[in-house]
Length: 449
Image (cartoon, rainbow, N blue to C red; front, side):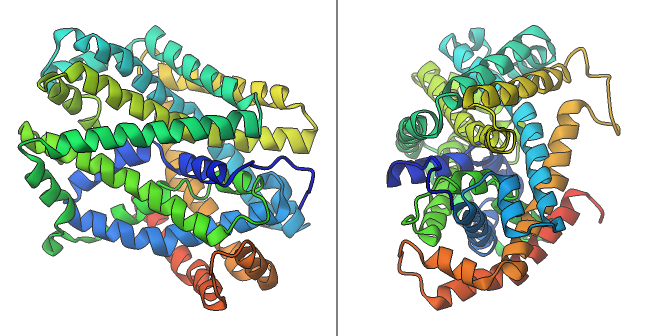
């Protein structure tokens, strides 16, 4: 490990940055609509199971690679498997990070737009149907979505250009507590709603008769994607860990807090949905169409709506910072670039591609590759192909190829009360359970069956 490499300064910084990397729209947007579509409690129970047999071990695997080498994703695999093909996963991660940052920033731009719109009460529009028309009009225009995408990426540049400690760590230490404070305010408010008991029953009471293969595979996919696995974010971040950072404990905390955010999002959304007579199985439009209509009919609705979309913006920002850092670290170390230049190139590329993704809903809607707009192509390729392949390769590499003494040494370093039995459990999951589960997610995502 490079002793001169920049490191996170505090234990709080380690937790805030790694949890921030994992927490994103997948927790606050995707989890509620996935749980709504797949029956609530049964989906949550299965999701929790897979978080700990897939999520935690693969997080550990990425931490082991990153901390042991103290390098960017490409340098890490070159150091651990010189002259071998395992390093191809680094290019998968780099490609996926650029794709995700590009289309994800479009959605993050929508959250910024809706934060501003919330202050004005959505111009008096209150029904889901009218809000649907308003959203379609906004998304299909060219100037506004593109402008918000570029503004969002510019905010990323301002943070990332300041470096690991003064930029990423400092902002994570501010943004993550803010995110949890807003979540807790919403949770208290939701628990006081008339439909709170029905919402909580839907979320926490599993109906085992509703468990189908699609529910299991949906929960498996949510467990994998919510932690940003297979991308290289956590390899990059853990390369900034100090030697005394306990990896398994940090993995458990990261997975635990990430899951807590998703559960709190469910506690926030489902009581409101039941109170105002909406369907929990609404799907992706739940956030941008149904919830604004609910806020419009609440006391102080403009305040709650503004806070909610601010929450989405904060979650988006902590995730995109970690995605951009993958390419920034790569440019810095592989090409000897200065931090600001590497950041500028990374963000500039995402601005160009992000603009094209934003225009995919408007003037470029008719431009398609493989039958998909650029936004959908980036989403499909990264989520359904690159991330599962990357996650499987990382799991197999650490489980079967990497010297067991390295795995053991990294997991035991820093304490954390892990025993040899704990190391064996992590390795067993990486060798057998995680690859099988990720393979099923991959097949399911491609709609092969």
